[in-house]
Each structure stands twice: as C-alpha cells, then as structure tokens.
Length: 75
Image 1 (cartoon, one colour):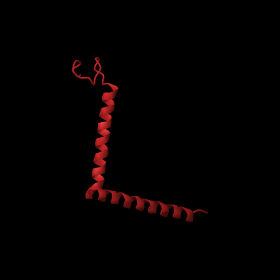
Image 2: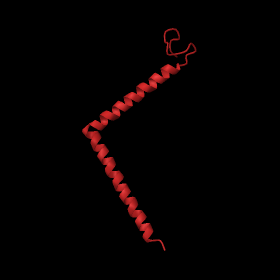
Image 3: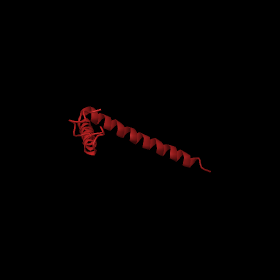
Image 4: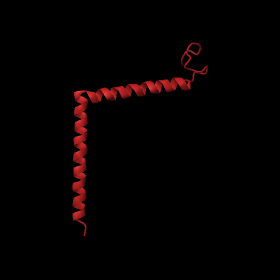
C-alpha cells in the first residue's frame, strides 16, 4: 500500500484517485500507439503488414472457391 501521507495519487484509505488511474491509462495507451506507429514504419513491420494482406486475399479467394463449389452442387 502506498505511503498515505506523501502520495497525492491515493486517497487516505489507499485507493487510487480517478485522475491517477486516468493518467496511467492514457500513458499506457499513448505508449502502445507510439509502438504501433514505429512498428508500421520499420521494414519488418511493413513485411508483416504485407504478409497479413496476402493471407487475407488468399482467404477471400479460397472462400469464394468454396462458395462457388457449393453453388455447383445444389440440385
């Protein structure tokens, strides 16, 4: 439990204040956003994006093949 007399981010009962919780969440969210942007700008990040898009296209094509074969088999 934090020191109740010196930490303004906690109530006297030891509960974090709303502002402290919001600040912590905003800091973590900002760090995650920044990391995602940096990942997208690197060569490795771009390669992962390209692989994902290729898999999405392949999946869509395969799904269309399955649907077409099901249409052909209908009486």
